[in-house]
Amino acid sequence: MSVAQVLIDGAWRMADVEATFHAENPATGQTLPTAFPISRWADCDQALAAAAKAAVELRSIEPSRIAAFLEAYARNIESAADAIIQAASEETALPVTPRLKDVELPRTTNQLRQAAAAVREESWRRPTLDLEKNIRSCFAAIGPVIVFGPNNFPFAFNGVSGGDFAAAIAAGNPVIAKAHPLHPNTTRLLAEQALKAVEETGLPSGTVQMIYNVSNENGLKLVSDPRVGAIGFTGSRHAGLHLRRAAEDAGKPIYLEMSSINPIIILPGALAERGEQLAQELVDSCLAGAGQFCTSPNLILVFETPQTEPFLSQIAKVFSERSIQPLLSAAGRNQLHKGVTALTKAGALLVTGGAFAPGEGYRYANTLLRATAAQFLAAPRELQLEIFGNATLAITITSQNQLEAILRLLEGNLTGSIYSAKSGSDDASYRVIEPLLRAKVGRLLNDKMPTGVAVSPAMNHGGPYPSTSHPGFTSVGIPASIARFSMLQCYDAVRQERLPAILQDTIRNPNTWRSIDGAWVKG
Image: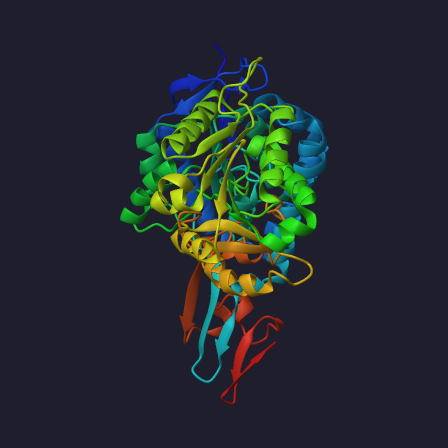
């Protein structure tokens, strides 16, 4: 049996195989032919050794060459787009158009190019020069970064091409990507183009490496290895917390994106003004990608008014009529059903769905549940369970006090949205609840669903625990996202010729803070 090779130290080589696995086509349930290796520790050890060597070499390489790599990689992905898109569609059942070809692949190459621009512009390094005391500091590479990609974005969050990868490389670090087992062939094709860009730009051979899978034991050993600088992870809370414990025990910074129910609050005036429109927006957001977005709304908070029952009935009707998209895996479908069952056991009423859907592949009926505010307040932990997939819980509220009490009990989330009346009739309520929701979410939205995450320097794709492991960082939005994979380096009385270029007196950088005659100026 032929087994796919791993990318270690600039070469494709046979893995030290512990076992093998196959991806599946979620639309059909069929096993795909290529076997991929689960690597033993020897592969991890060799990758770490190559990454440690590359990290030293990268410190003396001009930023322009790192930027050139990111730009070359973006071009290479575009040149090989047809094959990469086809592989991703086969392994995830996500549609070629518009999702993969028109949305996710351009987003991926765009964020690589944004990272390249940030490398050249260097504001992320925050150079600071105290000329009187001859003390200087800036942010710089932290060392080899391990990136664990998620299952739901085969390009834009992939361990070898996504936002964490782009940020880690932009900071000057080598990356060891751990592929997600649901799309290994997609990751292999992307890694081929990354290696080609490494060779084109003359970066160290260990700059980009990729293994497909490891045992849980070796995964924990990998993130706690002394050679590792930092770790980026996107995935489930269960897996993320296991990795965090191992990394933190070893003193390694780890940035996790894990769990979010993304509450949507619909105030009475908004519901009266445009209830039908809001129902359509909500359905489209909840069912986009079969609900398999980290920003998919899992919790709807709506006041009981004369418009509420027609609003919820419209949502239920469209849920039941909308075609059912395949989920990413059989395991994902099982977890979705387990979550729906847990919500019903906690008191939620099943309005529509709640069962495996007929037909080939891994499908689950579009599911709407509902409960009252009193039920939520009696079981807040159980009724704010994240369900990853096409299921949403609506909570009906009878008073402003109930809404405020619910918001105080929410866990941290990536996003939170408030819909209010354009007439201003909800403004008094908004002023009270906004500070409560603001404290619980990384991104606050008004009159907008949260499923789109723009690649913008102003974007925050992060939030309080358990949405992420640290509320001060974002995984989307360059240059801010680069800071996760950097360390602050200070130089005290170091000679000019020994300083990094960005800290030398002769280098004029518009982003540099300098102390001159007791005053701090920029430029």
